[in-house]
Image 1 (cartoon, one colour):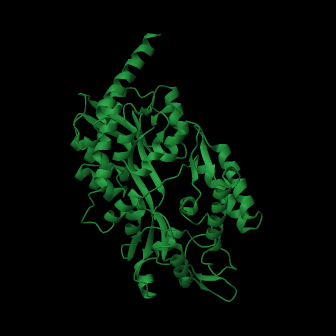
Image 2 (cartoon, helix red, strand yellow; image 1 turned 45 degrees about the vertical axis):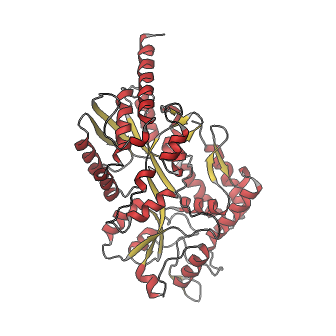
Image 3 (tube, helix red, strand yellow; image 1 turned 30 degrees about the horizontal axis):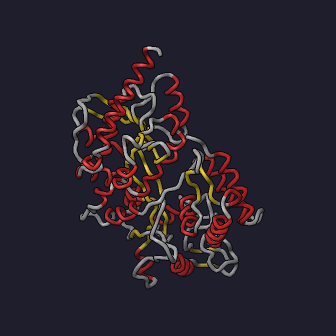
Length: 439
């Protein structure tokens, strides 16, 4: 072996040992101490807006004198190319802080933390069930850091004016209320929308809403497969029961944009659903917890509440959404520094002042069970958001841009009657399976 290889392997093994020492005691991650006396500044690449994450990074750097963080914002659309290019020229960042979809795609370029270093049982008992999205056959590809669950925002004034004291808890009640809020002319033109489902381009989170409906109805949507490839669990690539569940879920979703259906409450010709909600023109909005600061800022006078998305008649309450993790590139220049920085950043969400900063500025939720057990008492929303984080079940998006195009076409094919629901889903599932990547 060349000297370079020997040095690199030595550093990596030392890092793995430190990882084992740290993560074998992961339940004590609330401490700011590390297994070594590592010092330095770790460069972290991420897709969060710099201005939004700066309060968290500043608080972290105030707390940790030896290991500090330098954050570099990258565009999610071009992150893959920039990261691969950086690796090629020996300019890898020390860490990446990314959503689950990006981490999955880059998995073969990241240092997997083996189950010898972080036992599967410890991982399961420390982090939420949704964190399993980072677990693979040989370990974990990222340490869970934060979550962004999908929730239902609702306009209190509109509901109370219609005589509803509480938001709907199931899809039957949701449909009844949404239909009541929708106003139509004799020619079926909508003069007031009821609920934003059934379209794609003017809905902020159409894939997550579809994923939730699929999962609630019995189709796991897109998951890790038995091999290293993702498994698309509907249409031509799903089982009979999964495909049937997907057809029923899709038909329900599409019924809200079908003018001949009683449930017609939305169409593709109005503005973005989030904008409609902020302007008090929409009773319900399915959005992420991270959108709370934006909604508050854009309409400080909006009287709104938050709730779980409507649930299926049977089964446990669930939602979906995105997960964020900390991962170490295989070619990070200083593996010891990277491991230590990862540990400290994972610690940070359990330290009250830093966790509060994260929740108030980014409205992202912790993913550690011990932290979620201590709900903030002084915020009317964060306590509920903690509950949502516990039941979040994220799905694996193979490529957000390409999958967006595929689902947009799926909705278009059905709404234009180009294809029936079953055929449109089979077409979409085959296209999605073709773009799934290995790690």
